[in-house]
Length: 125
Image 1 (cartoon, rainbow, N blue to C red):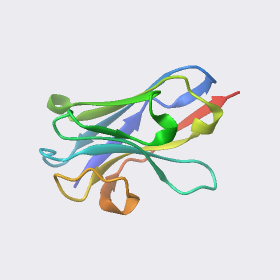
Image 2 (tube, one colour):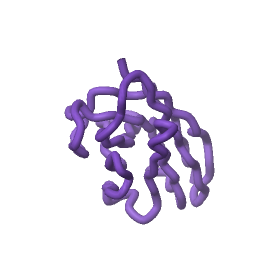
Image 3 (cartoon, rainbow, N blue to C red):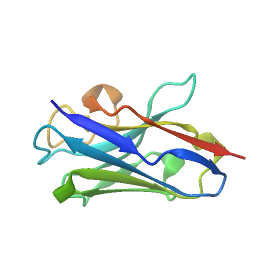
């Protein structure tokens, strides 16, 4: 059983930075991409960023492109999300996710099998 545990959320001001981390355990993650999603109050969960197993391929949603950076440490089974130039519209619960099978790096929520409990990010104006 996969366990994903996020950390690093908090309350910041617009323009500040935050770094989220996710530690994975429970099975091998070889050849599995990892991703971050977010869900604002009253809205659907949306894709933020994904990274391939090797770390050489990344994908970002347009609203965060150029501001957020996803990375992973395979040896430690961790994935991080560096968030810079934060905006009030970035306020949401952020979730780490692992897809249902290896070799895919989807944007669709339904193709992810394992989720963390989420960490709140609040950006004040």
